[in-house]
Image (cartoon, rainbow, N blue to C red):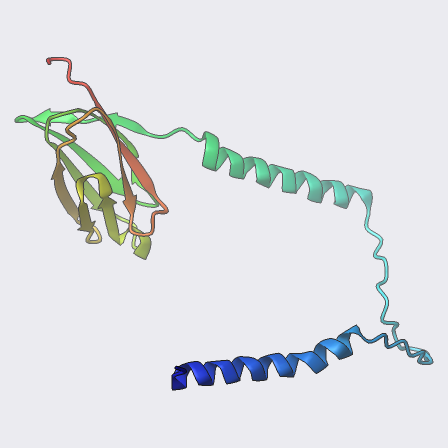
Length: 180
């Protein structure tokens, strides 16, 4: 049984389709009309612009340079790694949130609690929140204040943390404890 919403939607779609048919037919029609060109009028054809070879080379080199910079930034730039310090049995690290996370790679011992202290300096909305999906945690970060969270990576491995929009990310690398 058709409801009113489905009926109105079908009628609107049919009306839209029928409105397009004459326009498509007109667009496909071959309309070659010769019009006399008076002095001062331009033709509808493209005109070739002459550019010096040096300008063409400069644009090509500039484009290749930008492509290279983008590849370096996203694929080859070094991450900043830092080992957590141990204070009264808790591994602790300070992370500055300013256009990303610094450090963005944290080395800790697995099986021991870790306190992450996020100090947010960047006012952008993307960095208002940090997500730690492996630990089922989400933190709202206040501007120019430190927000702390404690997690315990049970197994050796890498645990990611990201901003609320998943644009900026960091990694907690848990390594096997030497004492065990």
